[in-house]
Length: 522
Image 1: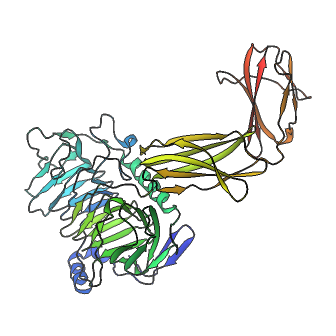
Image 2: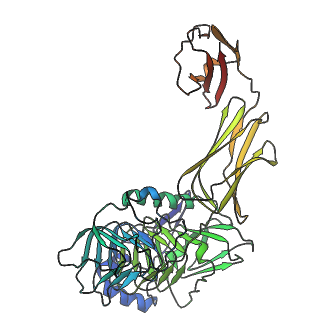
Image 3: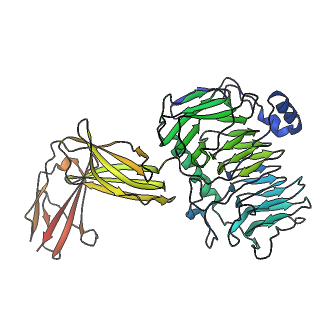
């Protein structure tokens, strides 16, 4: 794989890395040689990683995930991807959407593998769920494909083990008495749907507005991220010159701040060098590294403090640690010791807003928005601007904790004449906040449609209707059922055969606005 001149982009921001530190194909094909070269030239040993999700082939020599978390976090598997009768929640320390090949090591918490699991070259075997005391009744070790263990050492699991099939010469996982059982069963998790979920999640985070200039930050190996000494949610977009990260420093970012770091490169090396700056663990519970474009990541002798989201990347590792949950979207290959240590992750932002829309319906503005995740969210403040000042016109209480899609709405019954701008101020329980995008509606020279007579007995007539701009007209009763009708050449509707009651007449205009009017039939 030739890395020189590789492009990496975020939206319309594209840069070209002039050099790359590794030829990853050599790492794959001539593993022993590249280890020698790496240690000689860069003093590289690969990372220790904490709680992971990966897609593709995962080959690892010594691998651990530490500390079982119970609170929902950004990388929790949503319930819609868990199979029928699933035991436990979606908090996994390690989720591998492809195959996982490993040597000595273990997963301190729960592990899910979408492909095959292979234990090879092991001196001590593999342990899952023991250190973090994963629930004994939970589905804690899931292999959707073939489980292989020809090392003569045991795979020890706390909780239930599931595998699609067991290699003929391989023993099944073992459990302490009363701490789970083995099941030959697939599809405990919808791994294919889960992959798309994490890709969308990564894209959403990439599209968050940066909180500081420059955007993106062009950095050498030692990344320096600077705040304003305020506890809030920070978003940094980073392009690393040469693709190699050798240190991460936080300046003027107080503890308790949410930190989202979008690394925009397509090939990334995270490696310790003689000039590396160790990463502080002060922010690890609120820091998420997002790699939306990365297709390959090499981890070497550097302790990452925070979560990792890389739904498209191949991961190459030797030794080190990642202290936080991680999502890796491609293959993982490892030759020496490597550990996953899970730190319970908090959202870097209070709310992930999927959409925010506004429509005119009659003389009012109807706002609707949807979130795909919330953590400690308190409320949405609705603001309107018709000049140069934002005014609060209402608020809606947030659900607070969710990784499911939630829909909210609000109606402005008294929009001002002219262009009305609307935005949301999304406030967290710790008083941090973020703003939505701005939506616009024009109520300039609005003329109300008049329907008469109302109440009506025989025939409805209309005034102030621009029929050229009407794209749809339908009528419903109080139950919401559509009522058939015919409109004559004079734009009147015969209602003599309608039953007595209340009806709704809905006009849709070419600009998408909807006007709804009530009519009473005697």
